[in-house]
Length: 80
Image 1 (cartoon, rainbow, N blue to C red):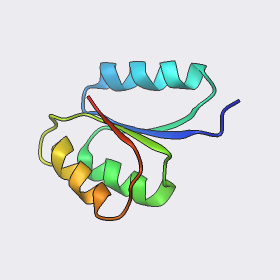
Image 2 (image 1 turned 90 degrees about the horizontal axis):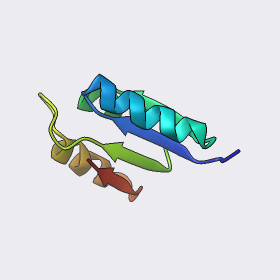
Image 3 (image 1 turned 90 degrees about the vertical axis):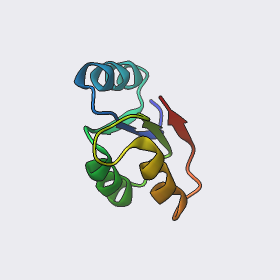
Image 4 (image 1 turned 30 degrees about the horizontal axis):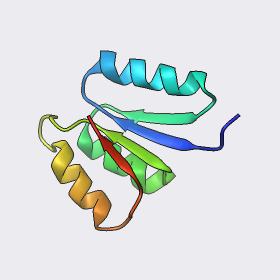
C-alpha cells in the first residue's frame, strides 16, 4: 500500500470517477471534489501530496484554483 495522498478536482463525474478508481486500485488514498471551491476546502483540510486538477470548471476554474494553491504550497499539481 502506498502512503500517497491525491486530491482529484474535476467537475466531470465520469472523468473524476475514473481517475479516482484507477488511483485507488494502486493503493493510493484519494479524495475528490466536483468543483474548485470544494476542492480548495478539501486541500486546506487534508493537505494532499499531489493534486490532479481540471483546467476548465465553472465558477472557479483550474487556473484560479492553482493560483490559490500556489499562494500557500508547492505541492505538485497535474493539470487536466
